[in-house]
Amino acid sequence: MRTAELWKWSGRVNRAEYIRTGLAGIGVKLLLDYLVVTQFFHRVWSPLFYWRPFAMVENIRQLDGADAIYAACMLTLALPFVWIGVSMTVRRLRDSNQPAWLACLFFVPVINLALFAALSVGPSNEADVLHVFQSEDARTPRRWAPHSEPASILFSVVVAALIGLAFTAVGTGVLLNYGWGLFVGLPFCTGLLAVLLYSLPQPRELKECMVVSILPLLLMAVLILAAAVEGLICILMASPIAVALGAMGGYLGYVIQSARWGRRNSTVMLSVALMLTPSAYGLERGLPPQTATYIVKSAIEVDAPPEKVWQQVIAFSEIPAPQEMIFRAGVAYPIRAEIHGSGPGAVRYCMFSTGPFVEPIEVWQEPTLLRFRVTANPAPMNELSPYAHIEPPHLHGYFESQQGQFQLTQLPDGRTRLEGTTWYSHAIWPQVYWRHWSDYIIHTIHMRVLRHIKTEAEVESHS
Image 1 (cartoon, rainbow, N blue to C red):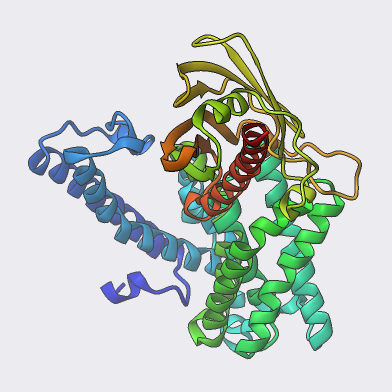
Image 2: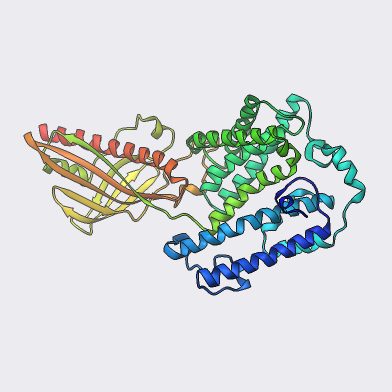
């Protein structure tokens, strides 16, 4: 084989070419790895490292310095061999009349060796060679895709939505993972898959592809709500990022289906679209992102001295029913606060619509600073659902307050600046997106409490 042919995805290779290329690739890869690891990085090399590629690194989630350079170098060195291995496997599967999606097994330890052995001994389907190049459609999913416009739209939307719903159930119900795979990988791959399915019979226009990429996400939202997997509030919160990423996946699908190489490899592209989400789940499961702590501060000026405000801070009466839409929709809101004891060691209970926050006092500097830990968090919301009550996993342990404080600063003319601060964490990614929602919710909770304290303190002071 010519060297340029190693990088191709189209065409076929027989078992002799596959064996020669595979053994040569393994030999070259082992030799290069040995030289780089031992001569350049001066580390110990062993063939056993290929069963656990990062076993030589103590903690892959906290790579820095020499370990980071080493891992990046080894990954870069592996990429050309991965490309050649997958492309050769796809072409060998095509030659032996096997489905191209089996190339995904290339990435599964042990099983990839069995796949290589099977393809090395399996015969070529010589009788099918001429037929393949004369009629490409007969060996692709186009043979079972509907050709009429309405049926094609319905088929692509329903199939993509059902697959997306299955991946959602696995991510939230089995893996308990609300992360990049669920909120980034899944909507992107759903839009990509829908467009690839829709374009199987013939190339489609960009406008059509964009519409088809969004429709399965809308259907998924309806099915998730109907199946009591999530509530309406969480679906609405996730919809902006889901729609944007679904459209991005749809655009990639449009680019693929409009290019000749993409249409010639439609089976491979469908396999890639199907495998991206579980791959993201697996990566996130093995290398979970680190949870960060965030701070939200809110302040208000009170026409009362700090001594009067302090009495309302440590314990306040029941707040009237909320008017804010986010609270009326189900997000937990504060009702009243009570305190047991006085000084450091006292326990404050802030009662919310979903239960109490338990807040042991750590700093009691009357009347300027009250700081407390949070040892118990109620559910962050009552999900808005057609059903009486649902309990998605993210209601417990994924969005939690860690610490809080009230700081009172005396102002001229007997007024007080009252500032509330919350330290919190959440295990939902991408945090750059979800932090906007969590900051907004906590700030709205702050202001509900601060306004009530302001009202009560001013009434007591003026009376």
